[in-house]
Length: 263
Length: 238
Image 1 (cartoon, one colour):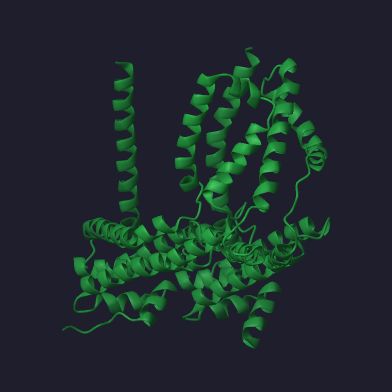
Image 2 (cartoon, helix red, strand yellow):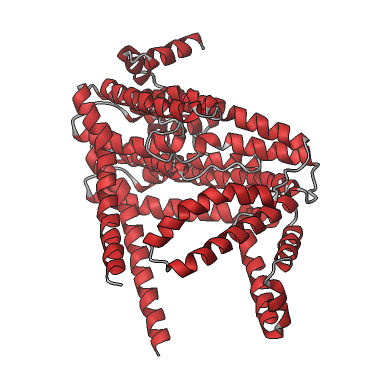
């Protein structure tokens, strides 16, 4: 346990010896898996605890008046997009009113469902839901590669980086590479503060950038590549992904633009 | 009675990318039987654990009937409901659509259903066996074409170990836990290790032999979709 914590600290401080050490371990993959699991679960703990505590209280009530005031800003933000989308001015209010009515109806349904009977008593049922949601954290998707401590981004993005690194004469093994790069998750422990207003977003951004830097250093160490080549291996997959997306999205956007312009 | 290589330790070593675990099963006197046993066991154990999770989830949420009644009562309180209710034809159409939707939506949105989960005790092992046999045959064919020296039995044995990430589906005994698509990536990595171990190919060829069956699946589904679209187009156009 002590060695494990020292390795994590060394990785956070970008000491390449930590990456080399873990990459050489026969159980490097398991070691990496543990890092992701522990960070993801610790990061999700505050929300899980809050949900369990909420389960002991009365069911949440969504008041239509509260929902209406919450929705006002979102609907105002939606208006320009509807205009760009070619919705006639005369229909804008009607559409936005329908959206508001639907949201209030959904809120009413949720309120009533919260109070509906279940076979298990409410605290137990809510506790099980919180437990399931919490244990799902390591398996969740990441909005962007390496933006969260999840297995999906670790393995899903990792296979592409591994492929590019191999094509660049990287000499790492699969288990060594995954073991070393799992340390990108360590800074994401900061997401434990995600709920703090104002601070949460900043800390998540810091964790992401820090994690990417660790990922590059780990790729370099595990594949015995220079930092420059490791950066190419790490960023080429995302650049290819962006290129493919823009090739798909750009024609659709141009089509929408020109079809809107001919009206 | 042959020597038994398969053990819990071997399964976990394969799951965590230990190349020697694949080599050990490849060198077994009957890797096909060991692989078949493992595949059936994975299917049964995960289905059984998921059944327990589905039961717990079912007991933690309101029944589908209660949800349906709440939604209907809320709809009936909307201002537009009176005009709908005034027209018997509209009301009948609504009722028909409503009944059909509630036959489809609960399953579509993953409402807990212990009865369907019980069916998985049969469905998952059968599906896993078919998937294992098909992938192993294709991967073996492509690997041999690319110069692989492995036996079909060896490929079947090592590919069976590549199914071990499905064991994570067993975590489904925790209700509301969603494992997601990571299992497919994990399995792909293990399939590469399985093909490489069975055929002793250099990494680019092993990767090609691993991926070519997926390309074939994709081509098959594309051709089937196009054929279906053409048939539907012809039927509608008549």
